[in-house]
Every structure is written in C-alpha cells, then in structure tokens.
Length: 162
Length: 162
DNA sequence: GTCGAGAATCTTGATATCAAGATAAACCGA
DNA sequence: TCGGTTTATCTTGATATCAAGATTCTCGAC
Image (cartoon, rainbow over all chains, first blue to last red; front, side, top):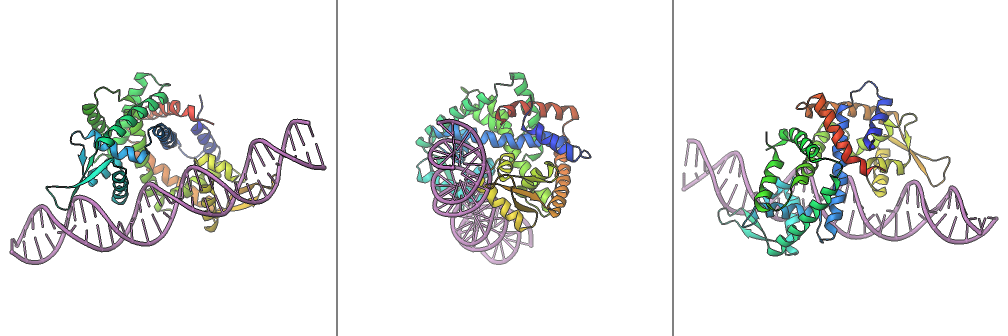
C-alpha cells in the first residue's frame, strides 16, 4: 500500500537520483503524521469543549498527581513551548476556571499552577476521548507492531532527552 | 534506554492504571519527534538563509521537475496548509525572487507558481543540508531498522491519503 | 446559448506563538 | 553581608497561521 510520502520520494528520485533519500522516508512521514494526528486530536476534543493546547497543560498537571500542581517552568518544559506562551496559556485557563495560580511558598519568585476540580474533570473526559481516537488510528497495526514502532521511535527520541 | 515519553507514560500509569496507554507510546513520540526534528531542520537551514516554510514550498516545486511549476492549490495540498497561508507564502517568496507567478494559460482563474533559477539553487543547497542533518539523527538505527520504521509509519499514514 | 453549481485564488480579521528583553528574587563565593 | 550571577516569570512586539468569506472563472445540464 502506497502513501503520500512514497509519491514524494519517487518525485525526488526522478529529479535527484544522486541523493540518498533514506532520511526522508522516516522524517517526512513523522512530520506529516504529526500534522494529521493533530487534526484528529483537535476533532476528538471539540466534543469536550477543550482545545489541544489546553489539554497539553491540563494533562501535565493531571499526571503529576495530587495536589495537581506544577510551576510554569516545569509546564513549559513538559509541553515544549516558550515561557511567553505558557504565561498566556495559564492566563486563559485561569479565566476559564480550569486552573489557579498560587504563590510558591518556598520561592517568592515562583508560582504554582494548580488544577481545579473543573479542570480535572475536563482533562479526564478529554483524555478518554483522545485515547479512543488514537486507538482508531492504530487499527492497521498489531500489538506487536505497535511495540516495535514505539521502540524504534524511542531510539530516535533518546538523544533529545533532558 | 529511557526517553521523555517513558516518564510521561509512567506518570499517567500511576494516576490512571485503569487506562490502556498503548496509543500514547506511539503518538506522543511522533508529536514530540516532529517538534524536535522541526527545530533541527530550522537550524540546518539557517546556514542557507532559508526558512522551513520557504523550503516546503520550493521543494514541492523542485521535485515536480521541469518546468518547476505548480498551481497554488496543488502546493497547498502538498504542504498541508490553507489557501490563505499559501497566498502569503508565495507573495513573500516572489518578493525574494525565488518564485514567480504566471497566469495559467488553460484556466483564467488559475495561476502557476514557477521556481526561478535562484530558487532552484536555494532549494538544492538547503536540501543537501537537510539530508545531512537528518542522517545524523538516524545514526542510532541500522539500515534495516530504518526500513522497518518507515514501513510501520507508512501503514499509519495510508488512511490519510487523498 | 444561458444559468447555476462548483472550483481556484485571494482577502480579511482574529489568534497563538516565538524571541528577546524586563523585573524580581535566590544563591553563592569572598 | 555584600555583589554578581543565575533562575523564574512575565511583558512586548512581530509574525505566521487559520477559518470564513469574497471574487472571478469554468463547465455541464438543459
């Protein structure tokens, strides 16, 4: 079965038979998959009246466990955005009542962002919907294939750790 | 070897042992890899005074082959952006002299975007740099592993074709 | 031929993001 | 305890993107 990237690579091969296009077969697929999955995710969240960026923040707080509290700095490292973006996100989530800002008792420069009960309900509902949608996308792969794939992706991701 | 997503999944498992987190192990890695690769790509392009979005458009024209000409509609489907975005991109590339707009002789609604010689040089140089950078990221994988990975990713991507 | 549905492109307005800089507090060596 | 460096957060200004709508043209049915 052919995909969009097969065509892309054939086109390149016609024009530049001198190049090794191996990297393209991996990274073009990763980029394009990320784009499509992003759309699917956004769609899964519409039912739950939540946006992808909101989920990313709420989920980081949720999986941190009780008392569902992290600093903005920690949140921006978890979600791969810049500090300005995180300030803006927390502002808007606080306006919606899904998180609250509290002063960090151990560091007067610091702030702790805490999930409200409403935020916890929202993220739990959205996460269930997200898992359902993503499972749907995996139907073409056996459980073993999924494990293999996750393992190979991990090996690409390790160098970016920390 | 552990990666960022292993920690993310362990955190979720601590909080929600009732959920099957299989999909996360695949799609979280794909999203995060896309983000990191995007940064690496941007960095590879800085030397060539070109931006990622510029490369995406120029590359689509380049691999189309002589006369390096595609419609805006075709370009936006290749690069997964909306029509407003493509209008803006072509405007800026034309200002830089890397592409030219020509009327489509067979359809008076239509336009053809054509690569200039400067645009061709720019994209060929940038592509070489991109392949080098991406090859670097693949050093942890054998050729066989890369083939396996590309094959598994293809099976995820096929449903999005068309 | 004419009309209406659909297609191709561009325009507009709103928005989220980033990079760089500002501010304030903690830390640490002398 | 003082001063300089680092850390944490927020602010600012510029920019790229998207969604929705406007415009212009094509094409087939009748």
